[in-house]
Image (cartoon, rainbow, N blue to C red; front, side, top):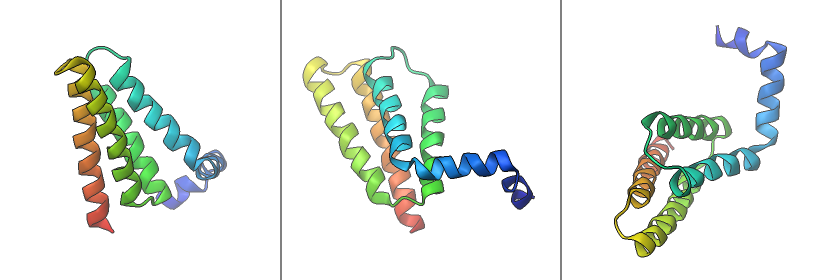
Length: 114
């Protein structure tokens, strides 16, 4: 069933395009998450789990190592620290903490899977 879906020409071209642009896709996802932390007001579970599912899909597609996810955790930790210094306990600080915890969980699952 899945083999027949993958052999469709449009899906095959899309998969090739995705495989060629690994760094670009990861940068887009990280920029979406950072814009969610820094610029979007209010917390939306749909937005959080959409971005997280997109990252997990891209991560499994490229078979990326857990080190990449933990490196992104360091970025989110730095954002969390800067937001905490700037505004104390605020909604943005909590949003950065949520992203940090979710990426830590994804990294642990990836490490366990390897």
